[in-house]
Length: 496
Image: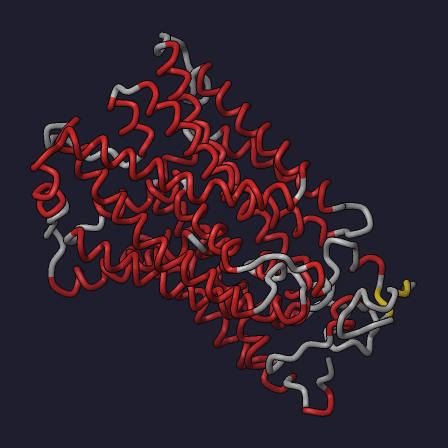
């Protein structure tokens, strides 16, 4: 059975027949007149990702644990930002050109039915991130409540007190409310959150600097002057930091098309990516470096392990007004990125599983439900593996999907898609493959994932853990190109 899509629904395939099980309003190509995002909106997608509590904590943790000089860690993080900028330009370009989100885009490589597999994997990873980020945001709310009413002596359940649970439920509910309001309201939310967090982070640094005085600059040079790792091991640690930071962004890298499709032009997308990634990441990392070092000398007297969560630093400053303002801003920033990176994408992905039965909104509700369970288990279970390992593992799972997606579009499809065939179940369709599945692509992803995940969890390969994303993406791209080379269409077969 097919339904006829009116002319204009597809910019390049007007009047094309599509199968209803592959199409709904949220998955259809976005017409040019509905693409409202400029560079500023793309910039704010990345700024909110960079500024989240998990992002700050990861950066500060790498400064503490990498085993190399802090300035080398800083350089590695900036290089990672440049590399991620290049990666998302690759995944964003086809979605700007055709106006399609990640889920239909994946059909070109996986098959019109087979694309449900990477969409499901991407959705599951996003739900894990959604739960984790919801928990991190709730710590800021708990900090504010404790600052206002004191910290009562309460028992715990799953590692969290009653205050923690109230905070967690509040943040989870807030995100659902924002999601219901729609993408236009979320855009306004992000446009406020990005600049607001920088204001608060600068205020936090000033508050710490005032108390640290002339001890701050020497602290930055000495606290992270770590030389426990030397020689080639130090080189490996440097590139491992780059790999871990790439893995942190991996959830957005793979599905950046979900946002790029709203861009008015490829130029605005590229400008937003550059200012939001290497530029914003450089500034925020400097803030994290100086704030963490200042708090270490002021509040810890240079003893123990530096505080890596900014809510901990705000909490010990003792300024209730700053605590409340910081809590609100941290929640706004973390919720912002959680919506765009970990809520909207799995809503699309779950909708792609059964477009007729699962709408974008229903997919969002399912994401909220599953993510709530994941976040509730963060303290008691998931956090025990460590944030860096958590990041590397999720990145290792997604990496082969990225390698296959990019290799297919740029090498196999030669940057040209038959958009109508992305929504067609016709056996003559370009992306029908074997009953809608490209079995070769599934096998490639499975093989590449074995190697990338092993790099994180197999003790003998522990030195490669920071490279898990790069390993998975390269293996996926190379194997896919090799097995699909004969499928490259001739010029006359490629029409858009």
